Structure formats: C-alpha cells, structure tokens
Length: 311
Ligand code: FO1
Image 1: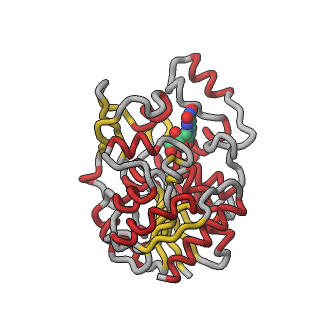
Image 2 (image 1 turned 45 degrees about the horizontal axis):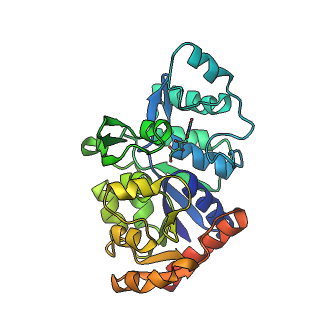
Image 3 (image 1 turned 135 degrees about the horizontal axis):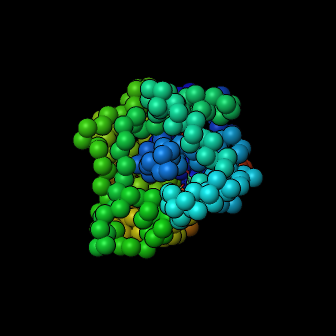
C-alpha cells in the first residue's frame, strides 16, 4: 500500500514514526514543509526535514522535540562570541554536521530533494522524505512591529507578537519538488499529520497544484492537532487565531474543508464535535489522539489508516 503524508516538524515526526510501526509493509512518502527553512551563519537550515529525519533515525532529542540527542553547543558558543547567527536560535554541534552536509551538497549543485535523499540514506528511515519544494519558499510573519522570518517569531518571540498575516515568500515563482504531485496522485491513502495547520501544513497546501492533487486524491484523512480546545504542543493556537480560525478540532477540519478532507480524526474528548464535521461532508471519528510514546503514536496512525480504508 502507498501512503503519502503531508507533514511538518515535531508532531508530524511522531506521527510518521507511529505510521511506520502501524504499516511496516507500506511504502510511505512524507511531503515535508520547507517554510521554516532559512539561511543562518552561512548554513541552510531545514528544521522540519531534520526533525523528521532525527526522529525516524532514533537520534532526536525526545524532550526538546527538535535537534539531536546527546547534543553539545561548543560551536554555537563560538558563533555567539563572534556575534554571528541568532543568539536565540541554537545550532548544536551534531546538528551543524547536518547543516554543513546539506549546504555543501547544495553548493555542489544538488537540489534540496537530492541532498535530502543523500543525507537520509545514512539511516534506514523506512519513509521517503521529499521537501514540498526545492525552491526557497520561507514563511514570514507580519506583526505590528514589522515582518520577520517565521523562525524569529517562533523562537525569539515565542509567537507572542500578534501575527497579522503569514506570507510565503517566493511562492509565486516556486514549484513542488519532483515526485511530490506523483506521490499524492499515486497514493492509496493521503494523510495530513497533526502538524500546525497554518505554518506547517499551510505552506504545503499553498502550492495550488499540491492543493488540487490532494483535493482529487481518493482517500484523504487528517488528524486533529487540537485536543479539547488546546494545542497538543507548539503554538498553533497563536497561528490559528491570526487567520481567524478557532482553536477547536472541528474548526480546523472546516478550515481544511470537505474539498480536501474525506475523513478527520478527533480525540475522544471532542466526540461531540463529530456531527458538525459530518454535516460539512467530512467523515469524523473520535479516538484517543495523544501520542505520548511510540506505541500510542502507532495507535493514532493505525486509526487514521483504518478510517481511510473505511471511507
Ligand atoms: N527551537 C527553539 O525554540 N529554540 C532554538 O534554539 C531552536 C533551534 C533549532 C535549530 C535547528 C532546528 O532544526 C530547529 C530548531 N528549533 C529551535 C526548533 C524549530 O524552531 C522548530 O523545529 C520548527 O521550525 C517549528 O516547527
């Protein structure tokens, strides 16, 4: 079975780890958000690709949610001493290895997708990661204090500056990476991971051709990133508020809409929201959605697959 997953970073990484366990014989492709990516200290940083790679490789810092386990920060201290980079955005020594590898491959003329294939081949991830685009389409946040890269809003300001809008810089001249549209149209099931709907899934669906491909896919099931009116982790509520969407499991389903979604998983505590979602033409199912560990992540991913197969 071919499964294609639209995914951002931390929540998406855990979901993919669960999916790999729930469907060990499936061919899984992850279309990964690149809106968080940026140039910093001369290196190309790709947070969502790295979060997923480290998690599937078992090399991730499970507590922090990003970066490598067993990390050190000697180079980062030197960069700070030179006043280079962002003091609020720490590049670990092992993580810098990844950024140096990626940057040198890009400078050798590889695309981001080619570099990702080469870098991820170090481990047996069991999931093929494809960046949504090889082009640089960075998410910027417009606030009263001006416009800034998403990463500054997210890590320096902890999304506390009210966002007026999110801008996908370079989108007009960008295209999906090779294989992205095929991975969606050839899939038996398309899943939307419980990632941030605005800054992780949003930048992927902002490509009209990707949105159209998912809309015409047969079985599309999303997993709510909101449980009992609160974000599971991260600051998706600040993002949803900025675009006028309530932080509720049904509001996010309706935000994606019935053109895109055929099914939507909500947590058991949100079972009462199912009729609203069903009335919009989206099949809803209430199951435990907390992904506390690999076993519960596999359960959630399995439930998403079962809903897709029951559609
Ligand atoms: N998040 C933080 O809150 N503080 C950091 O210093 C930080 C550094 C960092 C370095 C590399 C990387 O790939 C991710 C990093 N993140 C950091 C997390 C990052 O902001 C998130 O993973 C996503 O971009 C948001 O979904």
